[in-house]
Length: 252
Image 1: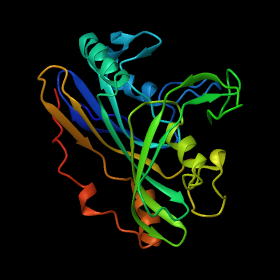
Image 2: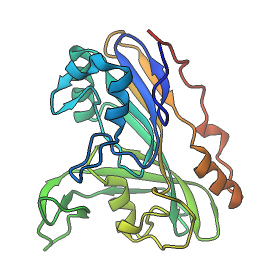
Image 3: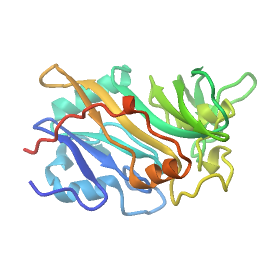
Image 4: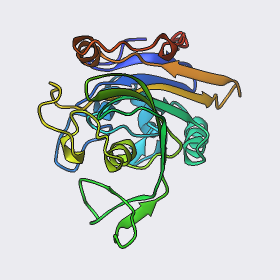
């Protein structure tokens, strides 16, 4: 089977599931601003049969990552798998873990259990629901962050989310006073790190129950070179515990 187009890399594939490494700078689906290039536009070139899987408005791909976020993205290859994976995400049965470099010295683990919504229907940003703040489309959101290592006033964190609300990690960490480095939309300083077309947030591990076999499936995606270079420049080492053996890719 041919490889995916430039910028996408297969992490795992069998008859039911395809896991790919999404690069930063691409929307998952074409945006309303007329951008033609997306993860989906590239994926369907090489897997045209996925057009018919799942929701016609958002085929095959079962969850989202922000444009500026890199990391693991899952697609279903059958309708049955699509339904089961979407249900697992909706019920919080999929473990999602991210690496985030945040501004500020985070010394202890933190947890944020606050709903998220937006001021307007098409708001580019979301906000944490606080008393007296009127928001639209408010949804529950739970985020936990654990500091791993740091340099100066930057901290590398392992972040877990139990829900999947748009911009959840970015909004929650900004609310706590620890914006994701490079994330200017949520309060990061402009000159802390040098990143182009992205911020320092990477979906590095996902764990779920395989829709066909019922067995546990864990997939990992190491940070891309631009993030690793920043960590190297800052003399921040990614702990070995964040590098479990990932599932060997299989092509069908």
